Image (tube, rainbow, N blue to C red; front, side, top):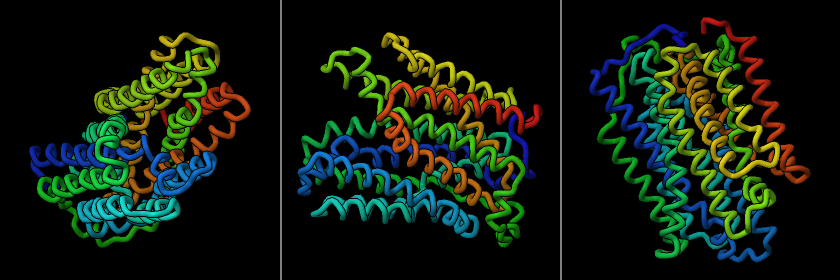
Amino acid sequence: MGVTGAPDVRPTLSAAESARNVRVSAAVSFVGFTGFTFVMPFLPLYIAELGVTDVGEVAMWTGLTLGATPAVTAISAPLWGRVGDRYGSKLLVLRSLGAFVLTKAAMAFVTAAWQLFALRALLGLFAGYGALTVSMAAESVPRHEMPRAIGFVQTGQRLGPALGPVLGGLLAPLVGLRRSFLIAALFYVAAIVLVAVAYREPRRRHASSAAVRVPLATVLRLEHFPLFLLVILGFMIVDRSFSPILPIYIEQSGVPAARVPIVTGLLFSVAAFSAAAGHHFAGRLIARWTTRRVIVRGALVAAVALVPFMQPSPIWLLVVATLVFGVVVGLAMTAAYAAGGALIPPEAHTTGFGFMTSASLVGLAVSPIAAGFVGARSLTAVFVVDFVIMLGMAVLVRRRLSAER
């Protein structure tokens, strides 16, 4: 088995209730991530509508606004996880989704770019429902079913961003930019109703453990837990390094200018759906392979899939490489989350998932910036660096993790 660690404490839920909790967690993630990315296609246009006329300033405010929420959430996630371990994840998810309703709605009434940025930063203090929904699914099932539950929720988290920008791009011209934020807020209203009505908070058999406060440093000192944090960070950095440079890379590869948006969109869609497939099927693979084997082989295959991007290649080969890359990244990320979650004691369950989310968000915030700076000198260099990171990840995990894990 690829998932071992802290003693299993089965939740006091029936099999049907556990399955429903996992489905609800995945649905909430899907709806929430769809709403989160709903406004992304026209955000630069909205900032320009707020009075920013210089193209460079529009790009600056767009980058700051998009990065504000994940940057702040990366800091606050473990702290909210600590609260979740005391009062339950359901309450915190409702709090987080409620904050999204209020802030998304408020964004429809801003009059300056700095106000939009401030609301996104404020949202970061209360965000983190993505980590909490993973935590809710994981704590609703026995430990041996955790990879399947985590992978199912992560599938929803991948599919939401694949659908959100498409819906936003279609509806914004019809309802207007400002009203689009109100529509985005409605996604979170639906998610609140779903959690409140359909999710049942599991009660652990060792109820007294909830009163025990595990120091944050103790969670970070769990054997191999920092390694899994590094794996999550590394895969996220490589996975998100494509976004700032891919359109330019496609253009420089000889694709006619009129076709660049289509080809770029195709590659992003392939990456999203293939990663979702990797998350979805990870549970079955982890049941047969060790965590070490899944991550090491995933990193090696990802490195090979990056090779076509490091040299002139036909579009069909880039599509195939993106497909393979997305699948193995999904597999390895779910394996790291499941293995890390299996190490966390029940009394620090949500805190531990908060740390793993912070690692993911740091990669999400740092990767586009780093890729932009490296890509300004050489686009190919970005993929070379990604290749080296993947090889290094494979070597590190193979050396640090025993063959039995």
